[in-house]
Amino acid sequence: RRLVKMATARRPVDKISTGHTACIHYIAHDYYGKRIATCSSDKTIRVFDKDDDDQWRLISPPFGGSGSGHRSAIWKVDWAHPEFGQVLASCSDDRTVIIWREKEFGYSGNSEFKIKFEPVATLMDFQKAVNSIAFAPSHLGLQLASACNDGKVRIHQGNPTNLNQWTLSSEFDVDGAGLSSYITCVSWNKNRVEQPMLAVGCWRPASNQSDSSRQLHTSASVWGYCNEQQRWQMITKLDIEPDKKGERGEVRDIDWAPNMGRPMHLLAAAIGSSVQVWRLPLFTGWSSASGDRIENLDKPSVLPTPQEDASGAVMPYWRVGWNLTGTTLAASAENGQVKVWKLDFQGQLKLHQTLDPQ
Image (cartoon, rainbow, N blue to C red; front, side, top):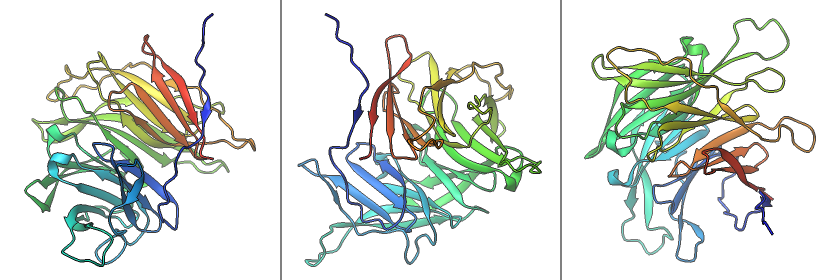
């Protein structure tokens, strides 16, 4: 008798009481998966460790929104590679990016916390809100990419021996529309043998807004760094599949899968009410000197996901993320539901689990 393993909905086995008083926008695991940072519209960041009993506990006072911190909602946090220490970056609606470093408290018997996070640098090269940030893979050094609503992606270079020193090393205009473009997400190529590369998600309002519908120009693209010209160049623009109504929603998140010896790259994005995955060739043959764009790539696969919630409303997806081997993909929807896909022996993504928030 053949047993067939079905993808069934599962409910959470544990919950973390974060103490946030407003919407949580992002949760970031550190390199080892034993520490998480959360950020919220309440202008605070909270850091939790997993103890020996597999329980998450708050390990530092909440920080991020007082004194030299953020003055508005914090959209995202990201951990640097541990070789640079316990370093965290945050971006906000207040047009800044702040670099935080762990520091031990002095001897005090009154505090329940042994560590705190202090700001070591504030990056202020932005004209509008900063939506997303991503530290580069460690082999590229201490670099931070930022996606801003002024239509630009910026790369800051940090000094590993002095975290107070950060310089704007490069920037590029993604969509050619300047301040009317919204760069929503960035993700680094983690392949060590290729040029530094970024996947970028972007949208902007259509130039003709005469009709009552909200028309969008949405795009996803891959950029590579040209060493000879010391600037970023577009390698390819990715096709985006429309939904059932023929519309292309906002690109809310994008994630570049670790390669792990595959003869291709996998990129996933949360676009409107769909999750789309591109299979791209390796870019080892791409010449930054020639600046040639790669054309005629395959269209993305649209993973089967429910388009509507119980009330019949379209349910958009907000986050996507690959595991460390690039074999499992998770996506979270606006209703809190998480879907998990795994690559089968033929290299196809199959639904593995559905995780319900309640």
